[in-house]
Amino acid sequence: MNVRGKTLRGNFIHAPQASSVEALTDCLLAVDGSGRIAAIYPVDHAEREPAENAARQAGNLVEFGEADFLVPGLIDLHVHAPQYPQLGLALDEPLEVWLEKYTFPLESRYADPEFARQCYSQLVDDLLRNGTTTAAYFGTVHQEATRILADICIEKGQRALVGKVAMDNPDSCPDDYRDRSAEESVSGTRALIDYIRGHPGNRENRVLPVVTPRFIPSCTDAALAGLGALAAECGCHIQTHCSESDWAHAHVLDRHGMTDAASLDRFRLLGRRTILAHATRLEEADWKRLCVRGSAIAHCPLSNAYFGDAVFPLRAALARGVHVGLGTDISGGPTASVLESARMAMAASRILQSGADPDRAPGDRNRPNSAIDFQTAFHLATSAGGTALDLPIGRFEVGYRFDALRIDAAAPDGTIRLFGTTDAISVLQKIVHTASRPNIADVWVDGVRV
Ligand code: GUN
Ligand code: FE
Image 1 (spheres, rainbow, N blue to C red):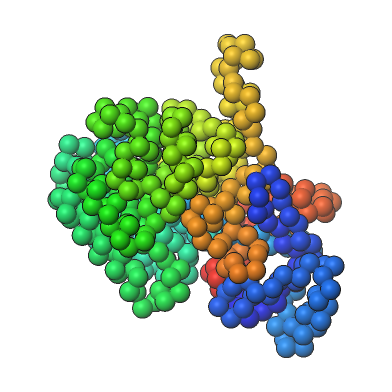
Image 2: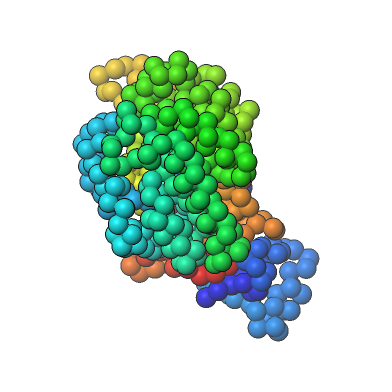
């Protein structure tokens, strides 16, 4: 049911800060007519009773059950929409081979709008069912297919950032799958920005355009400079890959004589609304640069296991104050679920802490103080994603958008087994570790059930 203009009574759990979860048990939350959170009345709030009575009398009260837990919608900071057909395939090669052998040929098929419509429709349906209320999408180089992706997000009500992939470097992109020139990278990006911003179905700006240079190896310097200027002119988000693997890192050092982060910065591609995927190979100065610019990292732990050559030092990144959220990196990471990414983030951080090679001594195979807890994983999947995107989503706070999930922790077909667990934080721990699609009973974006 749509909950715009309704007052909800139930159990809410969110994590505005890393490592600390707030359980609002039997809480009242009012959503206004536009899908914004208008008021929150915890159980002991002085005005709660009159608010509840007023809502009941007006017929606007929606009451949830004891096993229902409302959590913020999941935020996926890094999805390659066109790669969904190869999810779970083609994970046997290093990044640079994987791109040429599997990924560019698949993406080139989106020259066919019908193929694009079919695949993108399935993807957006599946992500919504998995609880992803916001996704940052890389499309392909194609204008029409990328417009179709934006249309589908608008039609299905998903909050999304949609980018036409810019890749014009003839030295590293196939002839039949690239922009013909730097000018085409920039003008094609501008055309998509205009299309999304002017879309008659997008008056609430739930879908945003994002400037999307694929990564430095795919782009000429002229394209990078033009895209940086365009992003500044249009005030758009920016997304790209940054120091993802040893090869990618070395490629940029060799070509530009500096790291990805330094080079992106000189092209004006590092700002408060920049999302950098992976960043597994950052150097000391890069960390400082990201902090100063306020740019965010899309941590894609499952993809990093296949292509990253190292475990991302997540806890150290958070301690430095860099914005970090989670990404699936479909299809570099073989899952379409942010919850799975959160689980892998916990596991990878534990492996970094305990060590990987059993033939080395315990103190010689690890990096201490690296593990994150489930509260932090939940925070990354929700609130931190909203902060990374600089959007009012990911937590239950007045003024924030009501993007949320109802988790039915007792769903018979689900995978959460409570065995009498009632304490909200323990239930959340079970949700984070064991929930699956049948437990995701409702998904709302801007108060609309999607
Ligand atoms: N670097 C450049 N393109 C890609 C891509 O499609 N996936 C990943 N994981 N890394 C990339
Ligand atoms: Fe990626």
